[in-house]
Length: 434
Ligand code: IMP
Image 1 (cartoon, rainbow, N blue to C red):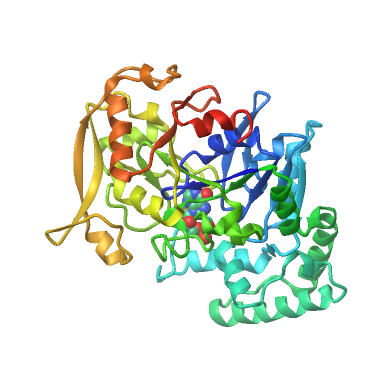
Image 2 (image 1 turned 60 degrees about the horizontal axis):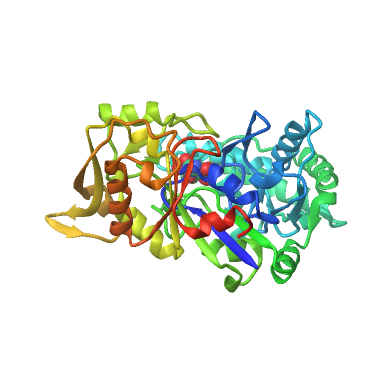
């Protein structure tokens, strides 16, 4: 058996889509374990481009099994539309199973997300994707949520109406707005229950049995380490655990099921939404990275903030995820910059610190301590071997591995599947079945 967790090592958008696609080809089961349709990645299949938000990326491979785990939150309307658009041209999809324990996004969650983001005092503004993610996880932990299986209960209509009524009351008092009409909520969600019913399974059992049968399992994380509710730049985080431990909880398996953890990082850093970002470049170089790297959100279209690579973040990601390998994406984007910088530590009030701080007030004051490395002018998009890379690019990757203590196992030099340089045996093997 072989199982791998793929996590973002930065603030999300590291190019996990390509890596998931690479690993999904030989995986038997692909599991999403957290988040919801706040995620977004682009997958190219049969010459067509697909933007996926909720379903695991293996969905475009018929014959595979895709799982939406208990740690994921589901907006049923989004799922319905996503599946419809994927099958519009008669395309066959992988088998899809949804955990009976996954929580469901309700219309009042979306409304609440919008209202908090637009609050005139700006106090609650986090720059969310406005998909209702924070509020649905809030209700999950407040034990006021609806799991998929709850929608299939006989008393679902009454429970839905009563909760929608309560939420409407809260919305009226807190924000002075009318919430979704309870009768309508009940009608809509009973209809969604029928749509969901054929997909619903005890997916923990399914994944457990697949693991016992020696299948290859890919646990696909959404977002990234610094957006993790526990380990990220709180409160500018998402409301779930993208870090590797979240895979066990969010899929319903024991941690020892996981063999390998791969962290995906860009060759530089990006972030969407609010919050401190020590290596951010607000100058021409930042603009250059944004243009060359096409750094605009898949889900919201927002321009991403761009900056130099931050080894403090990656060391932290290595620790909290237990990374075995780094997969470095978008190395080609750095071409043409006369000199490159990697942040090896932070300077905080005259003192050097090498570990990522928990306090945002500290992070906001941290100045990056950079190492400067030579750039390269050669186009690397056609390079397929490590030795074929310009010496400066090899030097950059070697320094990154040294500063983080994690071997670079794979390098991506363009969006195409073939634009990949494999360094570690693990990724070579993964082409045959990991
Ligand atoms: P939420 O997940 O919509 O609540 O948003 C919380 C924070 O996570 C915001 O800063 C979002 O921009 C960020 N976020 C959520 N999903 C993604 C993602 O897939 N990529 C990058 N940032 C994300």
